[in-house]
Every structure is written in structure tokens, then in C-alpha cells.
Amino acid sequence: TLARSLERMRGELVTGANRLREEIERRAAEQARRTALESQLRHRQRLETVGTFASGVAHEFNNVLVPLLLFTEEAMAELPAGHAARADLERVLAAAERAKSIVSRMLSFTRPSQGVAAERLDLGDAVADALGLVEAVLPPGVRLERHIARPGPVLHGDSTLVHQVVLNLCSNAERAMRPHGGTLVVAVQQVQANGGSLAELRVRDTGHGMTPQVRDRIFEPFFSTAGRAEGAGLGLPVVKGIVTGMGGTIEVTSEVGVGTEFVVRVPLADAPPADPA
Image 1 (cartoon, rainbow, N blue to C red):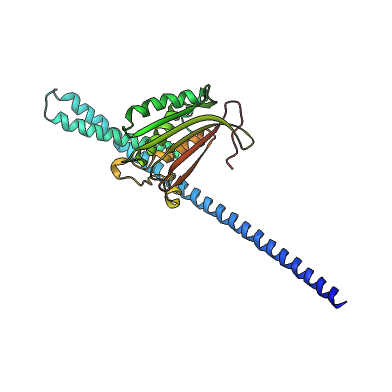
Image 2 (image 1 turned 180 degrees about the vertical axis):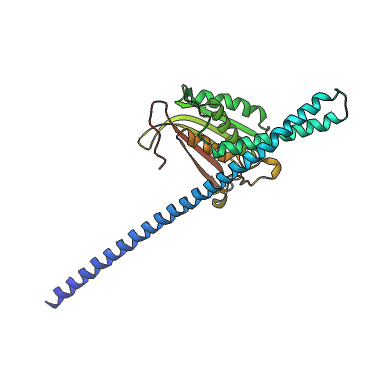
């Protein structure tokens, strides 16, 4: 009788311990999910705040640029071709045009869904066209590999915006492989994800990679690990805005010393938008 009682008590203790362990694991998982959601919320709120600020700055800056461009062009028109001041005015005009380009990218970030035309396009053809421009400016140490399915997946979008996505991602990849060079791989295919068919674009490099801290901030406007001469830190935020405007998602994986890969997925022309989760 004593042995049976002890065995029963042992069984109850084991059962209780297992239940307690399961409860602890469940609460730990819930806390991890809550922490991740809170982090995502803070990140989104930060982006919304910066986006609102960027929009206001862009509009104010644009109001200054318009008369600057107009008066500079008028002054140049009134000067003879060989006038000494023309060279200086041309530099002013070029600087103003660069500033105008930055303003345009700021507004693209704050209004990502605008300008996306509802036209059917072959993603493979659009990416191939953009790679023609990329290949022309790649340094000799960078090798371009193309893996583009033909015919490519068909989606609703604007080929100009697709070009902008490809050029920005490839430009970042090339910069990450300086000064030693490496391999840039661009792939287009149709995949099954989130319960449906999606068009997928992958851009992978063999560059220096990113730390988790840098990776978590790359889509923040004005964040850049490059020097001021390399850019304004708006390329990737604009890319994300374009992809989001097309109903798609963009993911990034990176390892220091190994390289980085961006994966863009957007709904097909005849498919509903993908679940962002």
C-alpha cells in the first residue's frame, strides 16, 4: 500500500511538473510574440513619423527649388554662350536638379502607392531591361548572373517602378562588394507562398553583409552606412514603398562576410494580393 501511494504521488508530481513546464513554455512563447509585435509597432510608428516629417520637408524644399531652377534658367538664357558666369550657373542648375531628384524620392517614400499603373507586364522582361542598364555600369570585378524564367510571371505594375526597384537593389549590391568585387545574382520566377502563386524577384550579392542591427534599419529613410557622397539613404525605403504599393512584400537575409539577399514577392495579375504575414 505504501509503495502504491508513493508511486501515485510520484506520478502526480511528474504530471504537475510537466504541466508547469508546458505553462512556462507557453507563456514564454506568448511573451516572445508580444515583444516581436511591440517591436514591429514601434518600428512602424517610427517610420510613419519620419515619413510625415519627410513629406513636409520635401514640400517646403520643393517650394524653394522651383524659383531657383526657373531664375537660374532665365539667367542662363540671357547670357551669351561664352560668358564666364555660364559655367557657374550650370553648376547651380546641376545641383538644383540633384536636389529635385532627392525631393522626388522623398515623396515616393511618403506616398508609395502613387504612380503605380494598373498594366499587365512580364516581370522577367522588365527585370531584363533594367539589367541591361546595370550591366553597363558594373565594375570589372563584379560578375552578373541572370536566372530569369521565360516567359516570366505576369503582374500588375509600372515597368518604370520595377526598373527603379532593380536598379536600387543592384546598386546596393555592387556597393557592398567593393573593393574586391564578387558575384551579383538576379533571379525571377513564379513561386507558391502564403497559399497562392506569386511573382518573385531575388537579388543576391557576395559582399560584406550586414549586422542584425544594420539589417533592422535599412528600410528607414535617410539611414545609410555609406558616406554622404554615396547617397541620401532613400533607395531602400523607396523600394519598399514601391513593392508595398504593388501589394507585395520584401524580405532580406544577410550574414557578415558572406553576403546579402533581397527577396521581393508580388501578386500575379490574376491573383489576389498576398498575405503580408
